[in-house]
Image 1 (cartoon, rainbow, N blue to C red):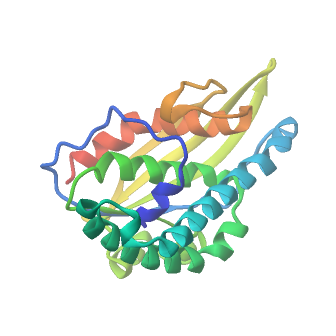
Image 2 (cartoon, rainbow, N blue to C red):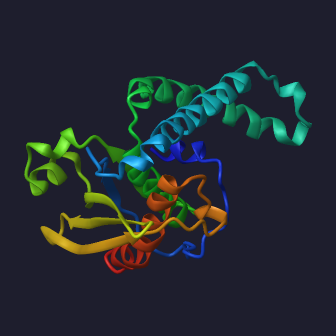
Length: 235
């Protein structure tokens, strides 16, 4: 769902800009169902989960405020746009409310799928027509062949994150994970890459607040080098 992208607070211009000429596609980004982390990093899990929930409720409150605003609060040349935005806000609020249980049950390791979905939407949905890039629960595909799932859900790609693990070697934390991109058209994994993450904060879209979130964010940053070209050459 494109609207969920607006929940992210750290907005910046990516180097992976859309050129306005590419085709559209649909992608299901599967939320991981576990991660192995060092015990010393467990103190950061609550912070990641709380930040996510706060972003949700902050955006939800803004949608509610928009519904209380009136056209006369805006200059005349902006009123038509405001009325359209207000209609959209009503629809978005309904969609957000339907996701509340998922938000409350959000786990820190889902940061990798959430943030990846955010970046892919920003990379491929700068212009219309928009692609459909959204998260799905791991349980949705657990008991299905990927080919069957992709056909039923009418998605072109399924993106998975597996074997997420953090190690501590001589005081240095490293995250390893496996990125897998399935193509319905080719009926196979077209990308399988082992991705590394570290505790650096690179600024801009790659800013992170603690060691654990940095491990996830840098893993996502490093995965884009492979993921975005793999998608582009197929659309």
